[in-house]
Length: 281
Image 1: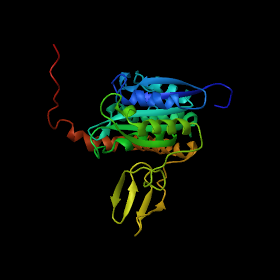
Image 2 (image 1 turned 90 degrees about the vertical axis):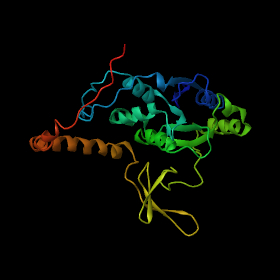
Image 3 (image 1 turned 45 degrees about the vertical axis):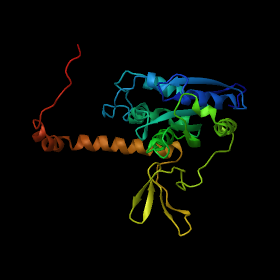
Image 4 (image 1 turned 90 degrees about the horizontal axis):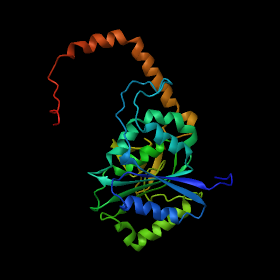
């Protein structure tokens, strides 16, 4: 944005359903973005994203040995000016494709400087009230490790296809989201982590730890969230890339201790029986 060309909004649809709530609500937001832009849609469930091999190749500066659609996705994220990520809630989580992508998150390091501080809207569509589980955390983790600026992380109640836009309040919400996507404004939750806004936390003794940014905070007698210590995850690219340096250090540590490691684990090689599914006919 700012070069005279229309902005590019990348919509990541984590649902296999054509013209479902994820797709139509995202398009409704795009229609209401006042800035000139193009909308590119990518159905994440159409991608082939293979499991990480834990080889640390990409961490050490080598190409990923997996030949799938991950690089295509990274290129699209790097080229976009803003992102909308929408997913249905499946069994208290986002669609599994979101986790599959995050499991390959070491590759995010390669585009972090291009994605840092880009705006993103996160949308979770659910049917049964109060059964959203960890779905928001999954989308927030995706955004955080790309260093993106979360304009909103919202839960939208809608189960039937198109139901989200049958509710006037949701239409008004789409209008508001469209207007803030490229603006300095954002929709912050009334109560959430005082560092990143996530509403999913872990109890630890007398304090609470955010499950996304890992900031530590407490709650006073009036119910106010009191920040105690930042989690050390969120920050500019040079800070977030310290994670890669730690991983490289672990790779070197493995090489230095390889002989001892092999001696320790070799005795477990033949325990148990590996099972496989029968061949398909």
